[in-house]
Image (tube, rainbow, N blue to C red; front, side):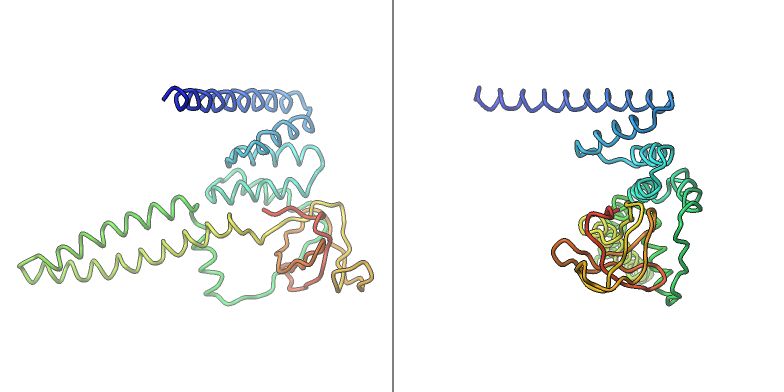
Length: 251
């Protein structure tokens, strides 16, 4: 019993120490940013992220520090990370739009079906946690409606339970699917940002491949395949090619 108590106390002590260390780093980073030492601020913020802590405001601050440090690629990356965790983060969205004007690669978008655009916009409305809460709430209403339909003696109540159940079932399926999609974006992300100043995109996963085009930092890409140290990527105008895996960071 004493052994388990000691382990528990050590675990609590480590958590408290970790929180204190994180708070100390955050204060140091904020102080460095206020003093105009943006590179040091970014370094401190990255140390917090390396500890496994992820929060929209942290990535937002990292984006600000990165942009002030003339690291455009990382600024785009961190603002996207903030929006990935909190799609409603207005400041991150505004700053991402602002820094994107400095990207050298201003690419056209390949037209896509309206339904795909609508579905992606719908899924991106909320975070995975919010979609999960909505799904749980809808499932609860569905169960209540089902109970009314089964046990109610009045026909009007049964009809109300039936139609309410149909609507909430549809809403549950939508929210549950959206939660799964958002979770998949976090667990197995395929969106990334070029962080190297420039990279030559090859026709095959080797240095001997034909040079297709050049991408510059800040360009957002979609990862489609990987072979060894090379990754196949697709850009918004539909072009596909291979880049070294160390030239980009996953959102």
